Image 1 (tube, rainbow over the protein chains, first blue to last red):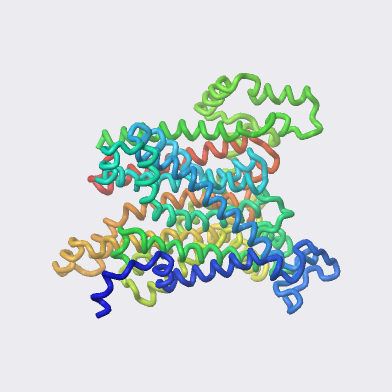
Image 2 (tube, rainbow over the protein chains, first blue to last red):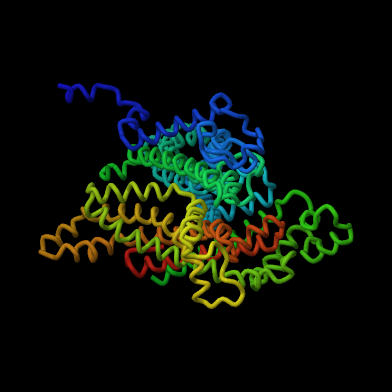
Length: 287
Length: 313
């Protein structure tokens, strides 16, 4: 009987469909925990992130200091929670910024035939730069601040989104409802936003999740190299850079932030994979 | 076929020109006078003026751009401020570790990824497939520089199998230099194998259910030949694309990995150039690497035309 009733039921929303997939559910749960840890950092953290204590310098993990202390006696667990705030906000801001540029470029290339070639060539040229290298150069040009890291990585990842949006727009442009809207005299900007953009949200969502994961890795790389966010601000990358100098005596300083990056990126990829399987019709047979 | 090649060639030239323009824009968006920034706060007005002339910053922006383009076309990327040598020389001197690091990592990644990806697709859903897919997902989440640090700690410091860093000093033989690339290449190769594994698996899955594979089987052809000859051949184009893409990612990875392992390559050159605000070096490195990427992509596209006669541009 349940089978007969199904078509009448409303299709469950994306979130519950995502939760129905074990791997994606695990990823989502991890993300929620990490995000909560970042948001609640001032409440959870047992110490102040900048509290120095030369007496307890380079202490190994213990009940007092769960993940040990660093070279200045600061609590590694506390700093990791605060680092999560920076790393996650930078990653998320990169997603938003690159989406805005990517959507504008992709819609333009996909919808207006005359602009397709120039915009696509520009996107090709931007894709020719390896991500970290382009980001390093942009940060060097703009100045090493958190905002500029977001701008640089946003520019780096925008072409990927532009390609995805363009590809979908090319298909949607030819669909009857777009033609109908045009025939009815709906203004082009309205068609673009209401009819085209609304139907390319799925690929944007999927790509955005992967950009989030990449941005976290890239930000960590930049901060590790010392060409990104200032070393005074705790991010997972800057913590690894500090820990590197004390690797022999105090491996925990770099181990825990690295593990945090792995878990966060893994969680994002699990969710991204789940979203892609659910939203990309081409891959349905592959589930 | 000739038309496809010419079309693609034209496209490549346009993209190369755009790459050169983007590099020019990036280096010139620097707020303030690049000459003053490079020389630091202690520079005199006369020093700054001299450097401006040396860098060709005197003319208008279009003049500067033409001057720059003319140099680029002749392979002249200007003079490094700190190394006191032409950027081209600096890049060439540092090319060896970066080149071999990229090649070895790509080899390691492909040697792992192709068999694992093919077997994963063939035995889809098996324990092997599940394990391989999970490990690949994990590997793709590991920052290569962090893995490099762990390798140094374990293989170099604890076990003493390798030097912790460097490229073997000035008099080192080729073999000694290459030995210094083992750990960095492993770190980079393992991380990048993840992406190739996943793509190989996906594109093999795509073709394994196709009609011609079933036909080959029903002819009584051996499984070995069905998978490797019929299926793999058709799955090869997307796999090649992703290997090409990985090569580009590897250059990115090399930037960070070289710094971790103290290799005197192009990557560590760029990082020190950024820290010293040596703009001509940054500009030259960006141009060369992006140019190589465009070239590699062009070669891959040509390979498509060779592998699959249906491909047209």
